[in-house]
Length: 294
Image (cartoon, rainbow, N blue to C red; front, side):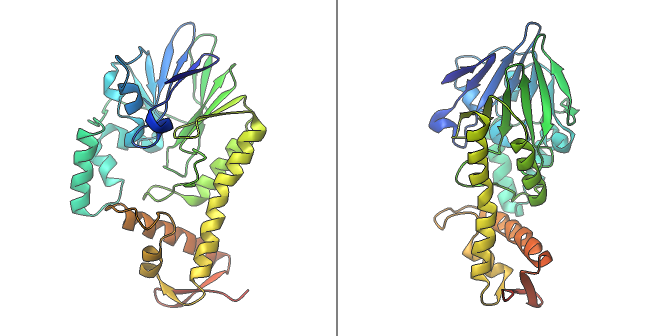
């Protein structure tokens, strides 16, 4: 399905671009055309729409499955450049156990067509791509990954926020290169940008108007505090990290897979660090934590 917002074409995949699909964008100027996040959604078309360059919001498989369809320069933030250039680096960045890493490498290759893009080029915050009568400006939004970025298309007033996706799942900061504080800072940065349209990568589609976007963004960001609250409740009695991992802060009980344990562990440790710094949790003995009395 294709939707039009000014000169921005939004290519929506099955299930409103639910994973493994992601939304791809095509932005046209008078001189050049860009494709943003060529995903599996794009590969469902009879042929990939022509473009003079490819921009990648971040080096996760669901955002780059269609990169190989283009013989054009590919650009990503410096923070994600190594992972985009090399599938091996991408797998290593997932922080999986060895056997699971082998399976992940196979999945990236066979399901998402990831071959590595050794000639990919790095951009930085504020880089402007001039398409002729239309610009695309990089808005660095780290936290999900180190290089995660959005793109502001002007004069249309379209801000693509990628995996600050506003879904009820909430912010994802469970990779080794993720950072919770950075993610919250990135949400604040998005909140401060006035745009006409705000595009997301998954399920929520395009939101019109800053007020509605900020309302949804606040609900999305509130999941972080909800996880804090859930953890504090669980720590009314002393618990180990293993207990917290088994209890789960991120995934529902029915979700299974080799990614679950490491993501839950990294998420738990990030919340523990924050709560301990705030004096809300204490380590009662090595490796065992308890909420402090309020």
